[in-house]
Image (tube, rainbow, N blue to C red):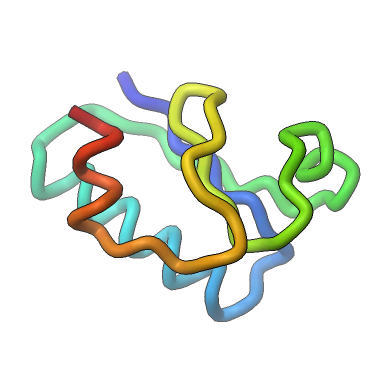
Length: 77
């Protein structure tokens, strides 16, 4: 199972990134769990200074932008 973490305070961009991640995982048919990390101190522990950010299995893949579902798919495969 893939663990997808969305790093952000819950702004519209964070919500869009979460939706894109769900779409990517669903389209690939992979088992996944999405966790939304909203506490700024927890986000900083990932080394992310700009939100939204996304981590897959604990590894930060992007920050400061909304990543398209197609890009997220490459990280989930």
